[in-house]
Length: 304
Image 1 (spheres, helix red, strand yellow):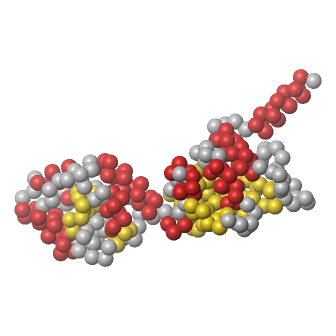
Image 2 (tube, rainbow, N blue to C red):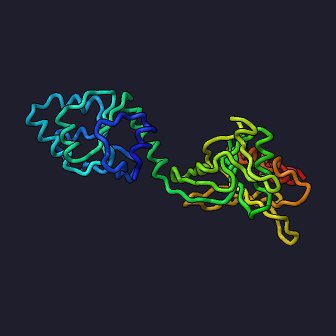
Image 3 (spheres, one colour):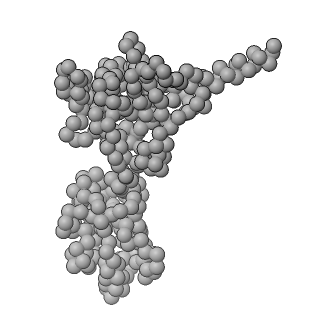
């Protein structure tokens, strides 16, 4: 279900015929332009999608006589349509409005051109209908890389994020991160509204990062590009030294790069996290320092 109020606000729509419940039964991120159906071909009609009327559809309706128009519109509105959206601010035939009111089908109008609105509504629905889960951690934008920092309470996640903010990076969420799967390969994270921009620092309490450090210190949402799990240093555990292997973790069915970061006194975690973000960018561009070192050593070995 999609909230009518949120859809109208996000797409800047005018309500012509309102929804009776305030909710729209939309379950997929796609639209239908019913040009073919208006000619009388009803097979494979995607009636469960928002119905988008542009200049072509409305111009075709104007070519129909009153009897044909009534027949086509009555058949069209006999389906349980989630809503009808008319673009370009075009006038809506009174017969269409009568059919919509009789069947309690919402109708909206916008000044936006059809192609632009089609992209906007698909993007909006992709986000609004995306599977989501809540995760305990901190999400920070570091050099354009979304770092999701996880770990047990008290390990230093918030303090590390605060140091990153002081160094010019941006906080997305602290303690609770709402993770959404916006595509088959992409996750985004945001903060719950009631704790947005807030951070808990042990020994001090709650601070407002936006008020304390300014508008450039926060961002509403960010893709999750790397998961960094922080844990206290364990002497008997072998940690990654070269970085030749690549680890991933599964979140909502999406594989996300993963690194385990051991914590011990005297280690500057903020700088390490900055390096991790830069290193990920280099790897995405095809450069891996560990692999370059191995090739260099092999080349020297061949010479001997």
